[in-house]
Amino acid sequence: MGCDGRVSGLLRRNLQPTLTYWSVFFSFGLCIAFLGPTLLDLRCQTHSSLPQISWVFFSQQLCLLLGSALGGVFKRTLAQSLWALFTSSLAISLVFAVIPFCRDVKVLASVMALAGLAMGCIDTVANMQLVRMYQKDSAVFLQVLHFFVGFGALLSPLIADPFLSEANCLPANSTANATSRSHLFHVSRVLGQHHVEAKPWSNQTFPGLPPKDGAGTRVSYAFWIMALINLPVPMAVLMLLSKERLLTCCPQRRPLLLSADELALETQPPEKEDPSSLPPKFQSHPGHEDLFSCCQRKNLRGAPYSFFAIHITAALVLFMTDGLTGAYSAFVYSYAVEKPLSVGHKVAGYLPSLFWGFITLGRLLSIPISSRMKPATMVFINVVGVVVTFLVLLIFSYNVVFLFVGTASLGLFLSSTFPSMLAYTEDSLRYKGCATTVLVTGAGVGEMVLQMLVGSIFQAQGSYSFLVCGVIFGCLAFTFYILLLFFHRIHPGLPSVPTQDRSIGMENAESYQR
Image (cartoon, rainbow, N blue to C red; front, side):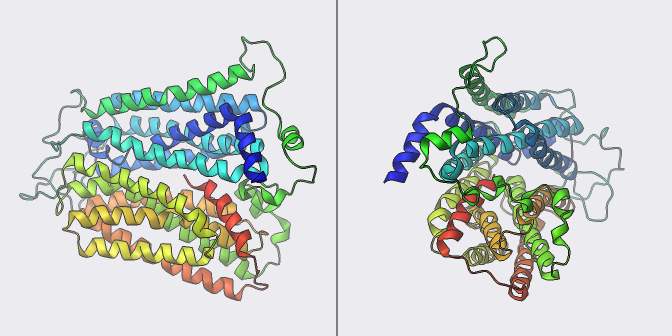
């Protein structure tokens, strides 16, 4: 009761900045899930093929990683952090407003790269500021922070759905095969083969597509609505800047927000703060540095090969599972509207929302479950669940009901894989390695690479290959996890960590999920 009362008091004292940091993660969520359901409309708008439009996903994810590193530059002072959040959230609204005017896929990729930079900056700065504010009580607030990611990701496909085009602008008599070098769209309503000589993709035109200077699709209104919905977020950051007297037009005075040390003295018992109570991302542990610094550490010399094998296999598991999360969210809509399912465009638009909704639900459910189940067991259940779900979807590929049920199932199984894997790997290495850095990097690279790979295969082999890729990547994740268990077993000095400590680590590891 005392702990709950203290946390409630902290929230009341810091209500405005806390709500502001939560709201900027809503902007993050809006940006992370809208590309999937609007993919076909954006292909028509930019006159691009599926592999070409996949570069848009790649540019967003790559710049998200770069933005996360760039965000560390702005976390030193409150003024720098708030101005970075204001600029990033305003940039997201501008991106939504500009997307309908992007008639070339390269321009669209550049705009989404800007969105990725803004998202990465938000990811780093908002997490850090909440931890500085609440210190060892930050776990609950970080959970809510990342709940807003899921809420934004759930909402953006719902906003886009009423404006999705029911008519397919893609030609009905063209198809692509694996050996062709042309950049024709793949469509499953095949009336015959129609070969067209390949041209540079920036100048390519296709029969049946609207002219490049024609009017945009109705989905433009969805982007403008999302821009307006997101606009209160930078305004909220601006209000917080005004409250803190950090605007240039306001006289400087002592900020109303207390520093982390002052807050600890006034709200915590007079005892020494335990750094291990902070989430792994924010501890000053030498093993949680950037990837380059981590690899340069001298104390890694002489470590057994199992030490490095645990890092590599764990990163490969997340490379596959986080890559599957990004690829499924991006292409499930395109898969559903193709044969054999031929789901209506508006109905298919609910699939990304369903997927992200169950990811959000799974993250909430994993908090109490993690206190009763070992992280290794949770990862095993999740990976097996992903493989089984894709196999069921593959077997019943003609059933729309199974697609919706399978989408919800995948969201649940993928939701807690990252924090469970992070907690298990850190536990295995006794928090002495570079697990956090390596796993975050592996997961981010997986999202970039697999989205491009699935888009290229989907284009060349047809919609059925989407589920085949899911089965293959899921089986690879399971294989890497079995190897991880093997290397953990032969690693010298197996740790024995109480279940309660592992559950705390799980809660903190959840803060990495987007």
